Length: 163
Image (tube, rainbow, N blue to C red):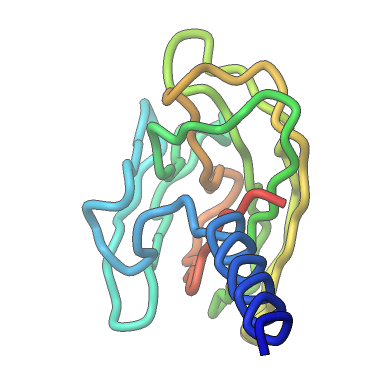
C-alpha cells in the first residue's frame, strides 16, 4: 500500500510541476488593460476588446510598419530559455502582420521572436517556439507589428509558456 501511495504522490507532484512550467506568462487576451497599443507619426488605428479576444484595426499607414503596434509588456523572460507563443488569429480582409518579441526600453531590440504571418477570414491557430536572447529582466514584451497595411486583426486565446 505504501508503494502505491508513493507512486500516486510522485505522479501528482510531476503533474503539478508540469502545470507550473506551462503557466501562461501573459495577461488575458481580451482585456484592453493587457495591451499597450502604440500609434506613431502617420500610423493610426484603434483597439477594441471583444468577448473572446482583442481587435486591432489599422486605419492609416505610413512607410514604417512599427508605427502601429500592440504589446503585452514587462515580461520576465529568461536568457536562453525556450518559449512557445500560441494564439488564434483572423482578419475580415486577409492581411499580413508580424509576431515579435522585443525589450521594453530604448533600443527596443528583438529578443529571439520575429515571425511574419498572414491571416484570412478563417480563424487560424498559430504556434511559434523561440529561444529568448538578449533579454532584460522584467523588461520584455511580446506582441504584433500591424502597420504594414490597413485592416483588422482579431487575436484570441493568446498564451506564452516556457518549454
